[in-house]
Length: 432
Image 1 (tube, rainbow, N blue to C red):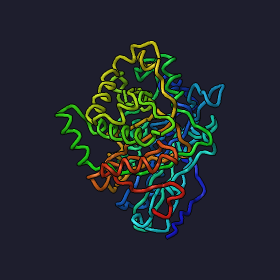
Image 2 (image 1 turned 90 degrees about the vertical axis):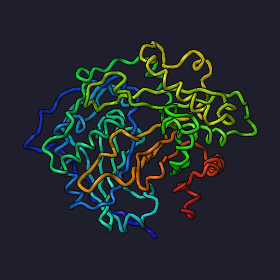
Image 3 (image 1 turned 60 degrees about the vertical axis):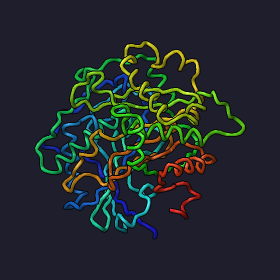
Image 4 (image 1 turned 135 degrees about the vertical axis):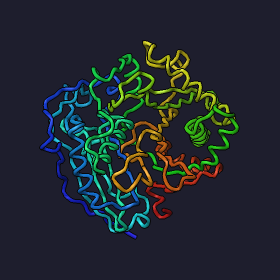
């Protein structure tokens, strides 16, 4: 069945006029913000419980939220399009699109293939572009999808979750958000990251023009995670540790080729971490506050080692985190720096679980599903999404293998009873 999404022309939502705060404030970007290029990231939130007029309800709440979050309605500024230095609170607002789908949510098929979000015109966000874009799409069943696209320089996932929680609270009639927002570096108590570390992170997070990576939506059974945690022992493995170990091993096995099968080739696992508590950021800070944990092992160790041993490597990397801020270098130890792997041997696994998206509620309850969507790959990545329905699976959005390795990756996942919900390769549309 062909699904048609009818979209209205964008309207610009600004802060509620009767509460409008002064514009013109300038907020310097932090060293954490500068780790990211001005690239777009999109999240889709699926709500299967109807609310009264979701488009107008959310649009009004967005206007109210912008009063408390004026930088979200501003623009970046600086001498270089790709190296902005500050945010100007211009009050120019957030483009908002109302849309309607021609079917019910259950009949829509892969939502990633539908036009459920507003896009930026280029692979990088320009200085003149809005920092946030939003679309609300109604389905015939009464459910709706909120598509949020933001410039990563503005906020990380935890910061965006805080903002969206605020929109939800205002939509439900609260007079003000429950968390007082903080964005200025002066007010947030953030330390300064060493410049080599900022440059190192930027080198991993870049858009590769012309690169195509198949997009896979997989479901990891919670029973598999429980077995791995039991094998590792009480308190020695988190949900993320187990998922990261599984994905790292499956992908490494999939990309091994006969032509290049060096068992000692370095394989790097990059794990972004919300570091607000670690660095002592003030409560309510919603800018970027991510530090990247690095786990390094040989190809043979990752591909053939016991899953329990991979969990140990991952946990060791996480335990080194407090040392990074005191390091004047790039965050890698000497061994990691000497054996830096090729780009394709570097896998990034991030998680948006437990950041606050689960608490987002516009009046009908929490999202039934959350999805990550990207137009251009920034590194090779898997994103572990928030809990959803059904509760016995954990969704992971994968954009981490070349087309020639996709079948092998799926085979490795299937061997662990990991289901591919949607195989979004162009050649696979007939199987959706």
